[in-house]
Length: 196
Image (tube, rainbow, N blue to C red):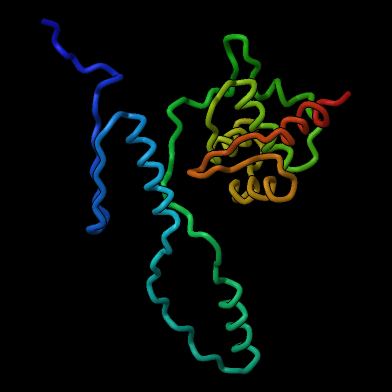
């Protein structure tokens, strides 16, 4: 009689999360658990964040100073969808020096005619996805490309990438800190940045 040994196909996994009594349990295959966990993260990201009370500003000595304080606090309020604070780390090490038939990042970008940080981010994303063959690319890895080449990275790489998405549609940001190249971004790199 054959024994039923656990294999990758029939092995069950379980996960239990308790975020201040909002308990969540799931049992199933690895794909099922990962899918449910991703849905759980999306639901968490959609929940409004609770904020602690800020101390009140001191009373102003003059009317002009009082108006300045009011305008500053009015501008500093952030609106929009709350973001998840999950930090992802890529399972693959970032290999920018090339090897095994792959050009190094430095050699690849030498011939490119880049005019802005939006184009530069798109070029690095193209290199990581199409040349180096990475399936997922994180925001931090684009910043690492800047540092590898000795360039000053944008102060907030996520803002630079979201502007490249909003203004030019070069990239797509599906969430959890990942970035994907769009067809428009690929065309930019192939036809404009490396044009003769």
